[in-house]
Amino acid sequence: MDERAANEAFDAMLPAALRAVSGQFWSSVGVGRTVARWLDEVGVLELVDVGAGVGKLLVCVALFGNRARRLIGVEQRAGLVDVARRVARVCGVGERVAFLVGGVADVPVAAAYFLFNPFEENLHAPADWIDAAVTLSAEAYERDVAATEALLARAAVGTWVVLYNGFGGRLPDGYTKVRDNGDVLRTLELWRKMVV
Image (cartoon, rainbow, N blue to C red):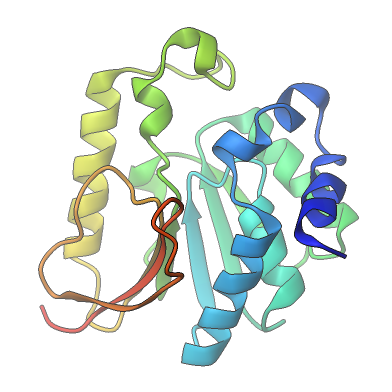
């Protein structure tokens, strides 16, 4: 199945309102496939997606990667967590992917983190929000970016970070870029914390 057809098949499992914003807010199937391959190549068996949305990235990583991998999505909207859990079950990976309602403060310590600009929606006009289920603001953006920088600063040496179009902040000192997808428009990067 080609990339477009794969994305359409995934998005067909979503409610219409979420299907309409999928390309803007969630990773593509191709990104999930690449992340799964990269994590397999470096032997990472645990990934937390911060701002997991409808779970598209983690479901794809579960489908295309190591079946022993522990996958956790943290998402602030309970409605999206419900959708993500349902999609994971439909795709046959519900036993291998967990979705939690929460924010940055609820992100567990992990071997690897995935960030696809999870806080950017805070800077959008209300007409461009997914919905009004949570409070969004420039202050929330700054708070969550700072909290993520702090989370990554205290992460153990050896921690991996996959960035897809960044997260609004900068990786703390000690991280080294291991690879990228070579696309300047949609940058996918794999980083590792090498020193404290």
